[in-house]
Length: 372
Image (cartoon, rainbow, N blue to C red; front, side, top):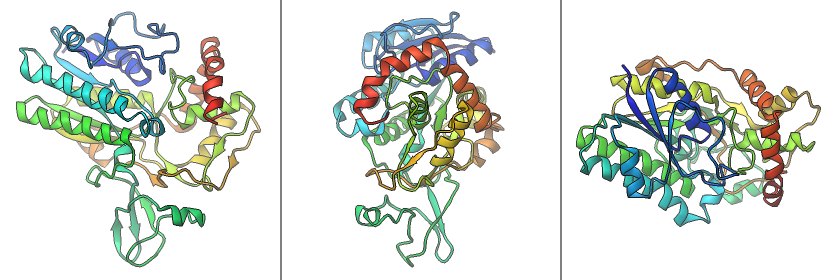
């Protein structure tokens, strides 16, 4: 059944793909986006935004913008957010104001004003887990804290059991794992999730939090140095430089195609089984960072090898990948796009004129931050 749907942040990377998916499903879609220049270099509405969607330029922190955007809306996808772990640790007020304040503004309007909103889906993040779940062969499942500087200075990269000292083995991270935030960004994403779910339950508005793992795909903004490791690796390879990999390169993450993420969101919209729940949205596979760099280089037809630094960045987690059994059981979600297929699509897109132009605009910022 067709619905009138609002997507906040709907002109961005993931949001715009979701808009396409919702339009294809026959929904009437409205986009609210402030066209932040860190994401939208020109400050203009992107050409790829679906022409069948209504576009409202505005900010979730602005009450008048929220009121206009929510008129007649039956479901909300709340994707508006400032991203970037490192940046969040010094632009603290900006992240909290945008992510927490924007969500509070949206929810305050929904719970206090007459409206037709019957479902809210919020984009949450795997970053709120901190380290993933591990297993000690002697002591069982372990939820370790982030590694200390003393251990990392010795180049001992793997997590150790605090009880017996054994090396821990990473296992899939379920939704039940404690969220140990180690950045302001992660904390704001956790707050967004809890705010939406808590208020949804309190006011009887079905709400869903989808914890995205490392999403990649076309429309990622190469001019944004916080867009993700896949885009940063692409930027270096396009510049004929080695991708830079910290530690020994064997730290692992879960990478998922934006197309699979769109499918998960639409399944959550259409199923009551998702209501009031938090779900991992990942591939369920652990990919080494070094291996991802090699996959991207191969897809480019490049012989460039990643540069393994054997140094660390404070705050980095070692392993985290999704246990997808909950979303599979509840919604029947199964990722369909392999990493190799998805990276080929991303690279073919990056070779386009506009993507290359965006890369050229990004060079200065990326070089300043040591990313190329």
